[in-house]
Amino acid sequence: MTRSRRTSRTSWYLRAGSLAAVAVLFWLVPPFRVVNLQAAHRQTFDATFNPSAFVEKLWTELLPKSVDRATDAASLLAAIQQSPTAAKTKHARSAGLGDTYYYFVKGDGRVVAMTKDGISLSFDPDGATAQVILETGNIFGNSIRDGTGVLDVSDFPNSQDFNAISSEINRRIEERVLPGLRGKAVVGAVVRFAGCAQITDEKTDLNPLRVIPLTAEVR
Amino acid sequence: MTSFIQRFLRLAVLPLFVWVVALFTVSCDKSPAANEASGTASGKPKVAVIISTLNNPWFVVLANTARDRATELGYEATIFDSQNDPAKEAAHYENTLSSGYKAVLFNPTDADGSIANVRKAKAAGVPVFCMDREVNATDAATSQILSDNYSGCVALGQYFVKQVGEQGKYVELLGLVGDNNTWNRSKGFHSVVDRYPGLKMVAQQSADFDRAKALEVLEPIMQANPDIQAVFCGNDAMAMGAYQALVSAGRADKVKVFGFDGADDVVKLIAEGKIAATGMQFPKLMARTAAECADKYLRGERTFPQKTPVAVELVTKDNVAKFGDYGRK
Image (cartoon, rainbow over all chains, first blue to last red; front, side, top):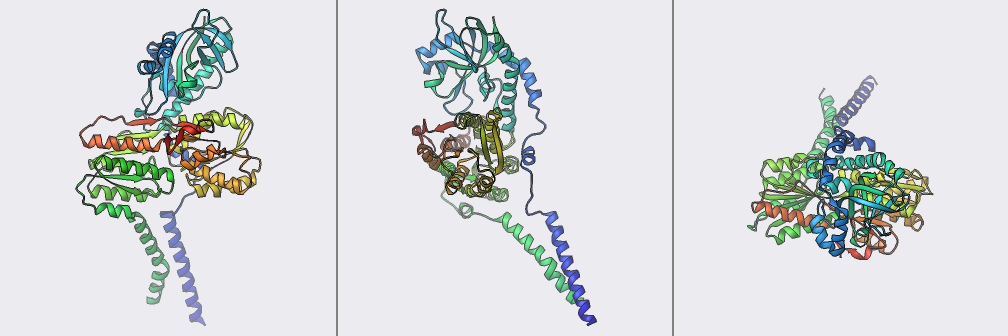
């Protein structure tokens, strides 16, 4: 009886010891981990990159200087009318492979119409047809980042950082450029602007050019 | 005492042994392709195509196109399937580097975790060309040819708002959480949709870019949220799984599904009006470009852009006739 009880106790110790050993093993080499989705995302995203600080320098230094390189809008419109292919070759910028490309344009256009999301401009002194529409609604995408050509994706190890720059640029345009434009523009006024147009489908995107304004001043 | 030792060995050391053997087996596992690769002797220089998974038709197209283009260019190309397992990927690199491969056309399993493999190849003088998925380093791969996922999903987000409206409930199915593409797609989509406060995301869950998992994940979400109007999926395999779940629940005509990839089955369902949209990623273009870059490198060229984005195009019912066979017709 005593021997049996001793054996039973030994067996219990062995089982407990085995379980403890396996538990330690699982702790040392876990077969899986439960991670919150957002926490997992933070692990993949470079926490040291600050898009706001990065864009501050871009906004005050590189982007204003880049306006000098923009193509005159009236000349570009004339070139597109003559030959979209030749205009693309001479003035467009592509960010990589594919059919999408960008025009970086500037000019003085007369307001011919206004809607909630856009201000239509004509460069023809007597024209009433929109040749350029300045986007004044929500700003999305990479038009300014890629159209101005001030940044190179190859300089960014994590493309999420590169894309965060676009979001920050767009936010600044909505906060710093659009309110003044929407507040002062009236039909007949002249707007001096610089900005970028993304061309994905030449049938719909070339006439009128839909430009995201980087700078805009109602004169 | 002897009995105690025997029992201890049986109950404690045996599981430990099984565990170690299992770990060893996983880390040393080689696909049949890998075994085949190490035994080839055609005299042609060898190129490895290491792919995150072949359990998805889109990646099969990427892998086969890379292999075929490398073959056309005069190389003996072999595909290695990492089965979404970084340990298998590391084993493929070990095999590749010890078997005399001259270049790697690479689709990583993990943007951070795969860097070490690429660095190891670089140290061994073997150039690596990433396809579709990036590694989070600009000094490891020779060049990276990558889909512009963010822009593609900005366009999808804008189309989503047009189709669903500015009010409604939706679900998002994410891909692998360790992959940058997952988050670039999600962020591109949310950069648009989050501007409309009336659009409420009732669930955001990962289905690992997997069709069966998407089906499994969406079913309970639909039961808890019977009034959803749309599902945004981070790839087309998950869109197919989501569509299948909706068909089973009799809700396919009420809930709009959005995918990403440009897979043939989804493009066909868009033409039939059953799936709302996808983003065409051009896997054949990326794979061919990677193979051609590898060829140029092996012929002596050394100047390559670190990253080349490939534009993604929105595919909807209005323009679906232009697309097919993983690209433009």
